[in-house]
View 1 (spheres, helix red, strand yellow):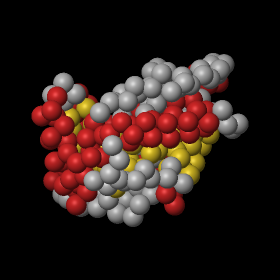
View 2 (cartoon, helix red, strand yellow):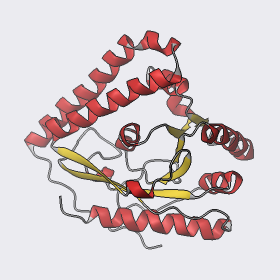
View 3 (cartoon, helix red, strand yellow):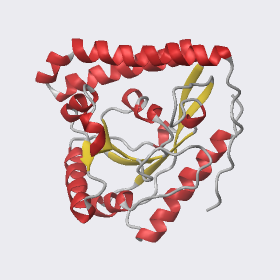
View 4 (spheres, helix red, strand yellow):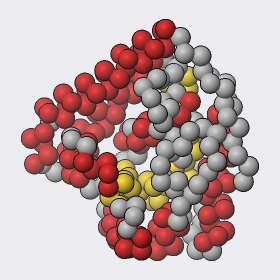
Length: 251
């Protein structure tokens, strides 16, 4: 696998700096206000909590467009299997968690345990029954992840795992972990790759946000039953090649 060429760094202007500050205030303020106001609803059903998350996501996306000047496009919806499925997604930043609440019916993210201590976020993620893993847990973690994912699949949920396990800056060499292969093997179902160029607008680190077009591209599913090495090569190639292509697209 060849490394993705580093995209040119956008020029940071005073306007971009100011818009980034305003947008950060919008995101954090919105999360705090909605989280506190909707806190009693955590006593309700998971579907109610999911509707809150969906509303928050729509408002964040609207703010991204109005304040930052960035728009989001979702491609390849025809490649998304109906009902429950396994999605292996490129992870370039926080934005990757937000649009799925809009374009998927029942997203279920595989999250690292450290995120669950974040006030409000952790509480809502727990209520929505996201799959929480201890990345240092070895085989025990894999077994727990497969068990939780099997339950989520039975409920018709879309299981989203980031195979690299952490955010990657566009251009970084890929580093795919075995967790996605464990889910693919044990659940015996196709895996749908998801590519993105989100890091060009919402970088993995820092508060700067840039205008442009973010694309989430749902790719054709990889058939079930393949050998681990074959599957890992196919999912990495599909995600990396499509993500690289998206990074080079004009806005």
